[in-house]
Image (tube, rainbow, N blue to C red):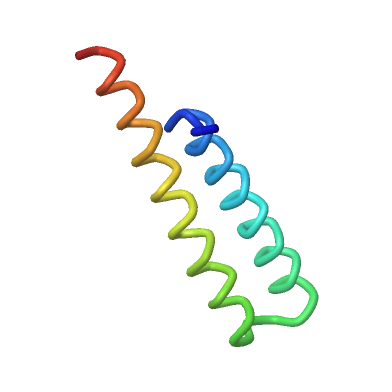
Length: 63
């Protein structure tokens, strides 16, 4: 079964917000380390992909 772009976009955005939360918590506890940069990179990719998928859903819906 295929997922709609909207559902996938929401999932990616939730995952990105979770990675942002983890990065903030780890920076507050231990300061900046390599792991924090990995979390920030993952969050950036997930939020970007989520927004792109959500925009695709609305573009297809309007056409």
